[in-house]
Length: 167
Image (cartoon, rainbow, N blue to C red; front, side):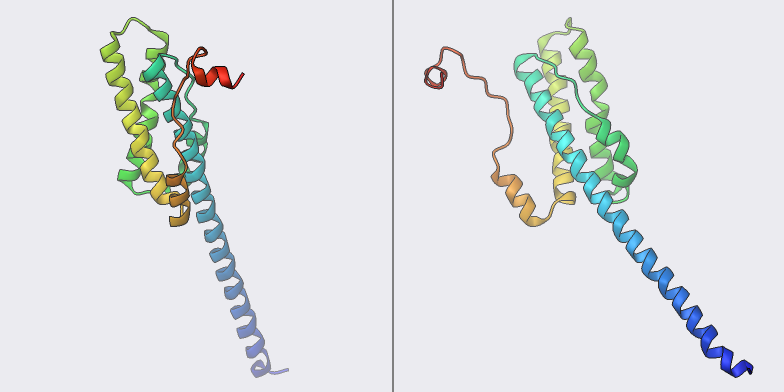
């Protein structure tokens, strides 16, 4: 067996290894990006629930706990698809949770101060939701989200005619 007979085998093995590595890296990168988009969606819906809780606190003084587990767990993946300004908008909504927690336990703040702080937190949540909506959803999904009525806080009186009819 001569060296000339081995060269095509060596070249073929090299091309096969390089091809396999390239395909593997491409598939791995695609999976990582897919997980990052999924992470953004999870954080979006967590922020939406938090936004509703902040609205509830603002309108009725009822403070429900705010969630942050998705954000804390998925932040590294989220950081791969967001630029610095977008990431800052997301973290801004979550950094306000400490003030929210303080307002929920200490009721001695004047209502005007509490309302101002809650409006600021609500604005931060709305901004973060806008950023994530633009990044994490396709155009058709954004249209569906826009068409769905936003969850908001509306309480009807138990003595209202609507409530009486549903009994």
